[in-house]
Image (cartoon, rainbow, N blue to C red):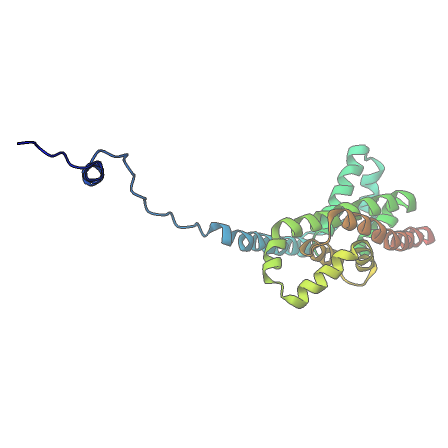
Length: 219
């Protein structure tokens, strides 16, 4: 008897059904849950900013400011490092709830008009931009999340008029330190904030340093 061979199609179908060694497929592991730390980051930084402002307020209310005779006697013997310390001290005070008007009058009475004006302008710029930097890095992200449509529209207007807005805010009756932190919380860019601060601190420094120097000269 002749044995009949299966057709080629049947042989291929049998090979497809026949199990064979295949590549090992790893089973998918469990997905890692997203960390909530990224969502809490802006609020933690905002809390740090609030604590810094509270600490600055406590220091401003408890530390006694030097009088005109004490500051003048210290400046008479101060070299470049001493004047640098004065600039840094005044700029740090302007980042706290300390009236800039009183500091400018004190500088005019203790250092005279030219030196007092230079210190008031440089320290005003440093203190203003220091508060701006803290507000920008510690509070801007949280404020951007909280901003609604109306606040976002005002924020865009403030950003588009950056130099003018900051300069007008600096010469307004709003406390200097509030303007610094508020500008940092807004979307104003660094360069307009810097230029607006420089322009805005000059008129008040001229006026109140001149008043302090004139009061001393009268006596």
